[in-house]
Length: 304
Image (cartoon, rainbow, N blue to C red; front, side):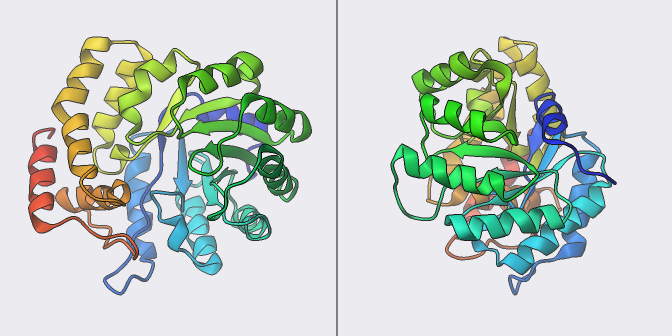
């Protein structure tokens, strides 16, 4: 099935809630393709507007290039064109271009460009990095503004002029003034994606800044709740949004914030809690403690 064009992808992902599935491993930390495919198939029943395969929550940072290709291809084959598949991409420029090409070869519709590995850089260096990755692929590219890759509105505007396949801006930084500047300057040239953890917390105020969608980790294990919450956000139903925040999202965040790396680990624990295990996380991440898993299981049980 032909891949979406960058412009088609931009329109599609801005229309609904996005999901970034975890990557399933067995107890030996080897990719479990059968379990992963079953998880993708189940998520598709809840109609995400796009899936991020091997992204941050998919432990991209722990994957070899060959594993990455296998994971992305499995997601593409399982979705069968029912929703676009975007792949994670990152590290230094040379390696990032290899991942971008691998994603395209595996059949992905787009890539999410994560921050470069380790180093900090000036705006000119970040722009050169993004431009090189965009030039290496025909896929639509979303830049992830966070950590050591914070780009200002001037840099993003110049990149939009040079890179026709740059279609999206995912914000994981949380600077309201910067986000306002970028949207004021670029308007609908880009599709804007909420990327702060946990995205549900910021969804309502970000909607007012032109961010019509976000990627939900909770979608992995409570997809019906995630979609209902997103519907309430888009309807600006403040009462329902804040009820969801009070009853589930904020207590969930309280567990997540206890240890570094739990933003990924707690998602796999959530799948464990609903009887759809995805295996352990790979080092350097650590899994939740037994007591924390019990606490999370009770919290999730209150939603069912």
